[in-house]
Image 1 (cartoon, rainbow, N blue to C red):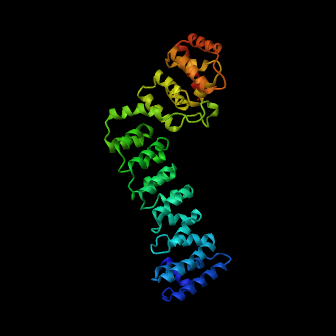
Image 2 (tube, one colour):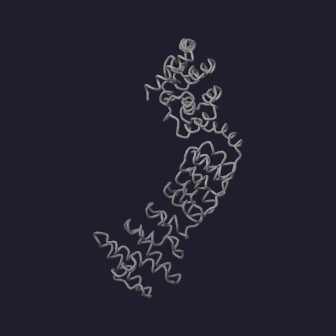
Image 3 (cartoon, rainbow, N blue to C red):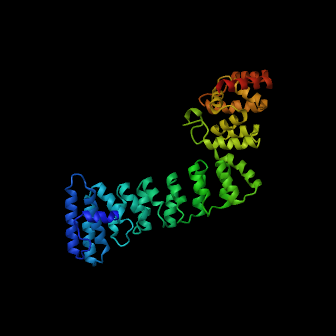
Length: 387
């Protein structure tokens, strides 16, 4: 015996009744008994839901449909949350039901609205666009899972710039996504592996976007790109230099004003790629600082020196520049580059005051006094001590 058959066995209602008047009486009785139930009995709740569904499934005259729409609207507005949720679950797949009932449920709290937003064929493009504009991200995320979505609705969801909504759209294989939408998600994917994976698996993804993402994603996804897009190695290496442009810090220019001066996981990953190719040059370090890319500079210098991110941040803040001199001398950074790094990093980390001439002379003097072997020894001891 199915769950539905068991349910019917325990509720006092004749589902074979054909009289519209009798159905209305049944609905009134079911609603009254449910409303009087202190424990909000599940069987009584399902009796109301099944009666509503049965009424909506029969052929009615226009006058009868208008009347039942008014009755059901009154029921939905007065019903408790659990009954509205059950009604939404039962009615969400039905086609020939009054639009006003569907809209009432679609604009309800998200636990009620979700199945209607995901499945109801009654909702139009305009209905969905209005909900996207007037409701929050949980409603966008439900709509993104619909199997049929007009391009205007997809565009509106893309514009929300919500990661979970984007993931639902990318996992929705029933829809076709425009290149402009994929490009918009590509920018978000550079900082989100959760988004990058479904994006790179879209069948309509252009090679150009896959190549643009290559150096921003994990090794696993890079292997997927190589396997599925057949991009020449020289193109991928050329894309590496372009990736540097994407790590501009958008927070305050001073590290004190940034939410987190530590590099993101993706910044660290990209720095490793540069390190493996021996491309963390003096010029790159200076160029990164001049762009205000403090966090990416930390990732690059940590990769080149072997120090951890916290230590790099510490020596950037250190008064006198001894730590930075040791790090630069040990990894063969030239004196000219050291001076530039010292001045630029100090201006970014201590924007409250400029570096004075005395401090700069002390830093240069300390750098000159170090030999490469001395600096390497100090660095090695520092790494061991912090391990």
